[in-house]
Length: 416
Image (cartoon, rainbow, N blue to C red; front, side, top):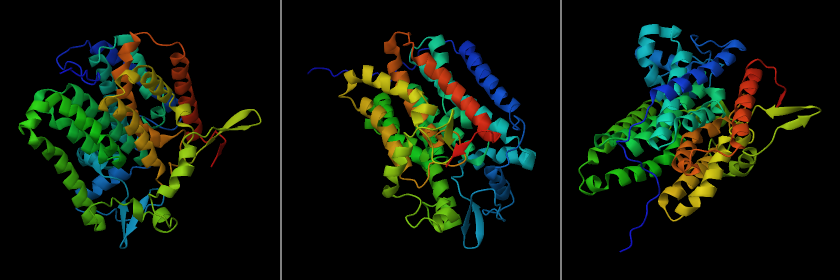
């Protein structure tokens, strides 16, 4: 019988790479760019976010309450049976619990958010190095992902919307890494990490088939012999925690609060998710800024062209088209292509695509999967890159750096 060649999804898990030098380069590069943003805005690394919903929720948990106790107008508050609740999935509050015990309202949540973002960046770097990418291109692509994309807009702040996405980014990036390179006793870890990501951004569940397939490739014999069925226990614990908390707050295991925001409960007859939102929102995924006399005017609601603020999407498409065609008969290729597209479709079925933002913030959730696909096929470039990749990086860095500073300072003329 002819042996079918597998897609290059998993690389020898025992291969070692020199990690310290490129890791220091990545960390210093990211912090240098963040320092520019702190310099030209009122933000500070050691400050506390004004939009600190997760911290407030953690403090209320510590006092024995599930509700917020008051309606803070500047936060997105779910109102249910006369009580006020934080309306976002709660895993970030779990992360902040130990810090809330020590620091209370003075918890430096910006610093915590930046540390989590850097952990995600380092796992992106580790993913490339374990795929045999040389140090210099590995550093370049890691920076392309983190400061050359719209992740730059959210990665340095602990505002409730951004903090959730930072955590989901890092947990999903780690899940891909351990699914590909984890040791034999770590098979549970990718599932656990993805469950944590879902507890931050529920639509990240779309990547479960890819994670499961990677684990099947790594541990097929053990799974057939049912030796590792306990792997499902850690993610189930996370899932049960989320469902119980949802039920205690909203009498439904599937409701985390967003449906009880006034904008959905009172102003949206079709609810939070509806397929009828898809055509308009899909168009917004590709809309361009408006030209006003001699400058561009960016929308602050519902996003702008995803490739304009995260040009790494163009590199993803290039690598898949150029090198992925040879793997067109494999499940790996199709999941690397279709799951991010499916994620976009799900996002577009949501009533909004985010407000008071620069760029297209929701599409940051796709970046770990897009980056993993790049890691899979990048080696076939033989450590050389097309020259047009470099302008894409500098554009992504420049537009997100300037755009974020301008939006935070209300310098940028925008349209809704």
